[in-house]
Length: 79
Image (cartoon, rainbow, N blue to C red; front, side, top):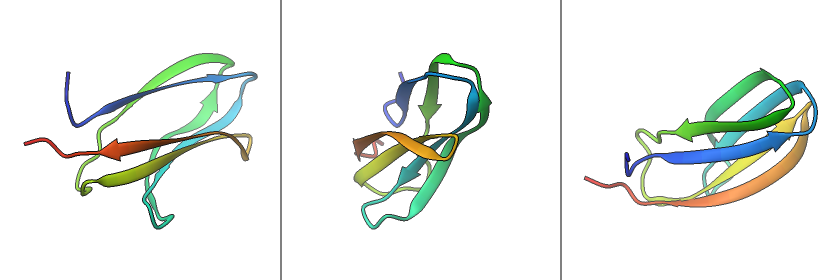
C-alpha cells in the first residue's frame, strides 16, 4: 500500500454530475480528484497527494452542484 495515498469511498443516490475536491486548511482547492457523470451506486477513488506539505486537508463531495459529504484527512508525507 502506498503510504502517501488515500482511498475515498462514496455512494451516490442517483446518476448525475459528481465532483470530489480537496481543500487545504485555508480553504484553497488543491485538487479535484474526480469529476464527471457518475452512475448511482458505490464508488472508490484513490487520492495521491503530490507536492503537498503535511497538514489537514478537507474533502468535499458534490452531486449535481450540491454538497452531500465532507471529510478531513491528516496528511503526513512519508519518505
